[in-house]
Image (cartoon, rainbow, N blue to C red; front, side, top):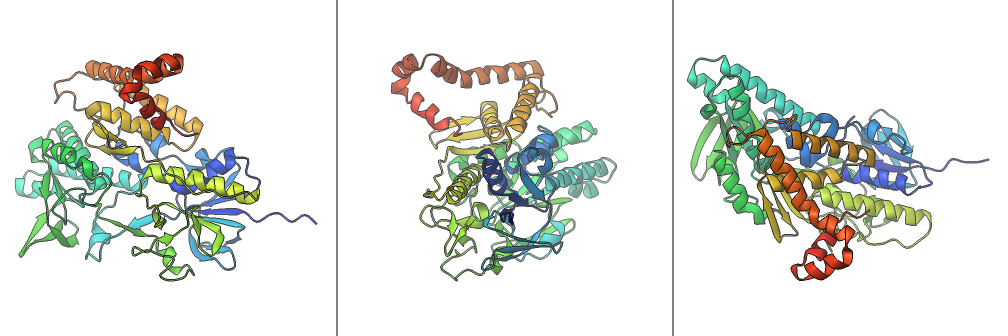
Length: 473
């Protein structure tokens, strides 16, 4: 009697999990693929600031899994894994349903870490998903509407104050975005934009400490200053209340009244990882992440793969970024196919193409391969275009990219600072087209006349740069 094969289970629908599933589908993988994810929608995390500001729309960066996986052959199960039995190869879900698996991919990601700060989990808003970005937008707009109806300046001040805790990339990108966005929103309501305050609180004495983006520290500091963001360095948050924060700097303690408090200070591995029956401490690092082999397999369990925020390879550690997770998902899919075909598995190779940071509305910095820094609106085009290239489905990718380019050229669906910068929408749109042509011209030249391009541009290093920038299919 024919017995249906056990599925390949993917637990977690972030970048690693979703891209593993899609690559398996594209490879004509012959085993059933089941993706277990509690949320209805995928969150394209690097572009959540655009979702908050309205520069991009929910359908672009917060699409439903069912839409992304239509026609892929991947079964999506909207449920939460509560138990993973590695020895019996079984995953139990919150609904009570369980799955026996043949292969398992752990792509659980991370969760917000509050460092046991009283009130943080209850009163500080996180910014890690599309749902949370929309909730933050709603909170900010409600506070602004409340402020415009509050005649007393002392009562109005907290409503117009946003405190962001943590000056890593997420905190800086959010602070710059709000430094541009909130004055526009408040001005539209008839308010005085000089009353809006954005405060960035950092426990250390420098921005981006220990982060892959640390080379962009000076650029980030300049952007924050241009937007009037108040920086509090060497400041610890000791408690959070519904509308206030207790802080400590040296021997001094003080409080900040704020109508909106956002937490971007840290992450921790998913709690389910702590319950996995793996050898301690050989198979975990200090943060609790799983230690995996170069092929991204769990030692002692060759049928289990893990990557992204929940795993690391000590021999070649990688930063927790979207470009890394994207490539790891592709590597896992390749090795799952190799296992099915009894072929040799290959170590996962990750090519870092540089760093990207959003530094305000329609402004970013792109540090390509840590050698070429592009700022302002050209940096915005490079950053957004690069991330849109990573959208998880070709059909969705093309549609969203076309929509974005149309919006950029014709200035649709986005709050722009053009009047404050002395620009007109027409000039900004023309600048977008011109920048796109500057970026695209070398690519077109190389495609049309590769020999001439190589001969004339070889001394500049441009051919090698474009080769490295070209997306890996």
